[in-house]
Amino acid sequence: KIILAIESSCDETSAAIVVNGREVLSNVIASQIDIHTKFGGVVPEVASRQHIEAINAVVTEALSEAKVTLDDIDAVGVTYGPGLVGALLVGLQYAKGLAYSLGVPLVGVNHIEGHICANFIEHKDLKPPFVCLVVSGGHTFIVHMKDYGDFEILGETRDDAAGEAFDKVARAIGLGYPGGPKIDKISKEGNENAMKFPKANFHDDTLDFSFSGVKSAVLNYLNKMNMSGEDINKADVAASFQKAVVEVLTDNVIETCKRRKVDKIAIAGGVASNSALRKSLMEAGDKLGIDVLFPSMILCTDNAAMIGSAAYYELIRGNIASLDLNAKPNLRLGER
Ligand code: ATP
Ligand code: MG
Ligand code: FE
Image (tube, rainbow, N blue to C red; front, side, top):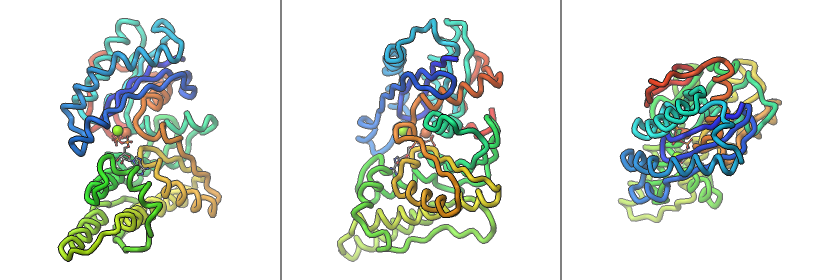
């Protein structure tokens, strides 16, 4: 099955051609980062407008790069949530029009399921069951993926998402937007033991996360230093913050594997490209005989290829959407 997939949930307009959920013929991504950087974050109204301007060219390029025509397309897959409602609607309306005019099925895809499925593109032999750590700009989940389309959420953040914490701390130390990659980079020159930032400590056996505590601790530290006029070592702050986040992510996901007796972890979402997280999980996995898998960097952040993979597994299970499918900004994983 050849699927044309469309993604427009946030600030990337993307279209991809994916064969049987695993083989990517093209994956065109138009990023709006340069525009939103001026505002220090994604402006929803601006994002929608940019999607409208970009989408037709992005789809056309995806087709031509893949050397296929619209007649070759067996289904159209599209993200319908979660995300910014105005942004989602642009991709969704475009996908509906295309599916209707071609007379092919429309498949609505959950964006987070897409992030997880990025691993199927990278690792051709990977099959459920496995434990997945989803760490993106808006979400942080530990998921037991038991089968295609069968997700059990075992832990999630009670406040900020992991990527959100990276972005806020980066902004506070003056690194700019988007902050995750910048913290990752500058941390390499810093001492991760320079400051001790607190980790959330729930007094029960939860696998949930909290990142607002460590974020506030960093902000308080910066305020204190500014007030007393002392120099701030940005690299040390970044590295110490990153260490606190990476440790709790690693601990909880390893604990999940032990509880569920699963020996495979797949990481997904933008923060999955963090080099310290990758290293920490690989080392922990090595010790326990747990396989740790990551998508390549380009498949970690938003892209339509991952949506095309998820759409394929929805399609073969018969999950075809009707043309009145609406955008669902708060769509939960495993729900429709
Ligand atoms: P969601 O998928 O939850 O709707 P999103 O699509 O905005 O949110 P992604 O595109 O998956 O999120 O990821 C973007 C996030 O990943 C940003 O918060 C960014 O700072 C973070 N990120 C990207 N690269 C890195 C990195 N190397 N280290 C840490 N964080 C990173
Ligand atoms: Mg993005
Ligand atoms: Fe995303």
